[in-house]
Length: 321
Image (tube, rainbow, N blue to C red):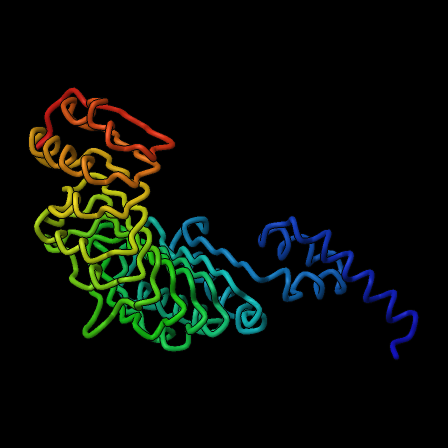
């Protein structure tokens, strides 16, 4: 049995941990942890290190970012097993040599690898690194939410089929490759693709039969290549922003929410596509139309939408091709 003094000490630590919980990671580790050894010990309790965020861009320059990343890796090696959510932004807005870039990527992989088996949410902001994902992927069996972002010139290679728990995937990069075979896990329910410069939508997207939410933003996919979206029979929310509308839009009759922002194409073609779709998408409860040709936002088009609960309409006056 613990002594009364030990029980009092444990209760004091529990209370202290509750007081620490509103603090962000920087305040916790750079201020509270420096007050005393006891505060330092409490500051690294598992419940206080479940979420970790690191932004290399706040370090000032590349050399400082590398030093900070080394410190983060050492800290992760001691406490990373408790981390459930990891947000790493190793981008720095200065030109880096190839050697330094490779070192940064290695540090990033090291930080993720330490906690890969316990991670539930991971965000990687890779800037212009050409990055191969794979050293930690096989261990990330609990990962539910993965977000990869970078600038238009970032290239990422990823094979994600082993992530059986993955439900949300955000890909924000001009170039990326999914790898061979079935690279997107069938467990995905939410997918967002931004800035992808390929003209053809990856065929694997249409094979995600459990997908309930899809966002395509600033992608270069042709309307014809997106026609296979008709196979996504579980899809409830669809968003098409600054891109063409899929040829099969009118066939997505199970949709509950549709968002269209500044669609690419001739105004008459956009209006015709939307007109045909809204006549059949009668299950819609929410509709967002922004930057639309004037001909595409007539209230008469809304007549078939008997279940509509909310609506946002904004037309544009200038033609867009």
